[in-house]
Length: 149
Image 1 (cartoon, rainbow, N blue to C red):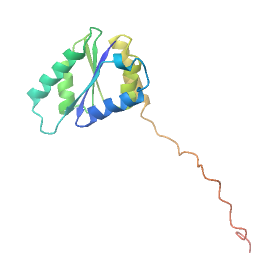
Image 2: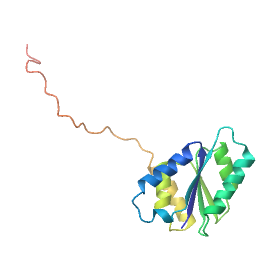
Image 3: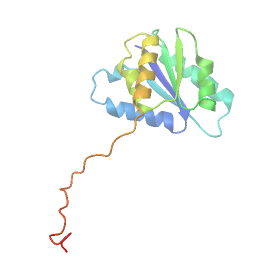
Image 4: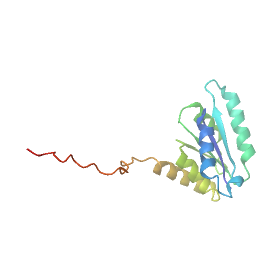
């Protein structure tokens, strides 16, 4: 199974992992997933973050590869994540959102390249404009004397 590491500005990484664990809380396979977070604090020193990220990737990698999801291209978490990329072993995607993470977990049994593609697709499809929700209230009737003249 492809492992997933989320590296993002504090507390986003932990929040996304907690949300994914909530969504899949009744899934009997959830315990077998390798999912972890690295929250990057505002005052974090780059060498320490790089060391922590490398340690997490090594810890969760079971031989099928690791997908690293990060938030903002050009920011410290993404800069650290990009240093982890290893063709065929560690893939990195930026712009993480919950649909992206859920898709990566859902397809974790596939190859690293396939999981990356599914995650990117899920992340993109998860960003949409929603129409107004239908009203649950009964339609209002005009007052009986409305329009009478």
